[in-house]
Image 1: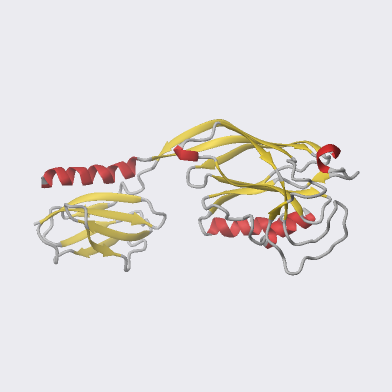
Image 2 (image 1 turned 90 degrees about the vertical axis):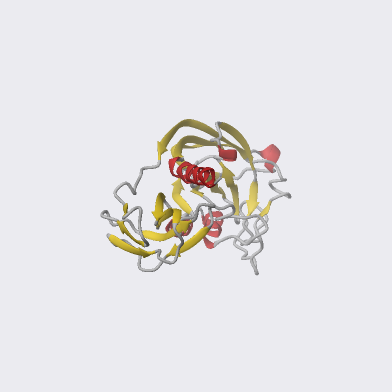
Amino acid sequence: MKKITLLLLSLFFVSMNLHSQSTATYTITFNSIWNTTDHTSVPGNAHWSRLVGATHNAANQFLQLSTNATTGIKNVAEFGSNAVFSNEVSTAIANNQADQFINGPSLGTATGDMTISNLEVTEDFPLLTLVSMIAPSPDWIIAINSYDLFDGGNWVSTATLDVFAYDAGTDSGTDYSSGDVITSPFQPVSMIAGAPINGNKMGTLTITLESVLSVPNVDLFKNIKVYPNPSRGNVTISNPTSIELQKIEVYNILGSKVKTFTKDLGANTSLNLDLNALKKGMYILKIISEDNKTKTQRLVLQ
């Protein structure tokens, strides 16, 4: 029974390490249908600011209905200015919550297309958010929020989404060319159901999968050695390439974690583990890097 349990435990850890990551390439096109029939009127200087956004890993990272707009979204909605929103994305990237700022094209007319080509999306950051200012307007935008391109573990091959207008809740103007009327206090982002948009869609967003590249995880730990093995309790981990380590976990034959090392790991080229307090038998060492990559190693204590 113990041999079977150990085999299953080992196969579990191996399966974690052999998982492949894939990157998908997309073409994304927004087609505007801004018109007088659906949207009451169209101003003479009607246009769209750049279609900007991000790919990220947490829903509602940059935009959420019924929640106040961030400063970045406010600036896009009121001025078509993307600088602060870009900074918000950069902060999310630094916190491992996003992986890219999308700086798409603008459109100088009421109707037409804005296309983002060769957008590379990874499994780790599959959610898509896009915004563009309806211009001129007080603080109105179109938005796609946290659309999952890797839905259910499969890349979306093609999709056509209706795109609607939203009020950022920062300016109380009522028409396309209303003067600045600062909303105080700011109100949550909401869909525009009344005049002049009338709740009608502003266009469609077409998502087309162009290609998928599957790349097996590179074994960053191939140079890490654990010795002696078998051991009488004092174990050395050789880390010649100075991989930044987060922690080392020890599991018994039943899969229970019995020891964790987190202190003084870092990028040391050699680490000493004191396992003398553990009983003799089979164990699994799980070595975890700062970027959450893992290596597992069977260890015998005798």
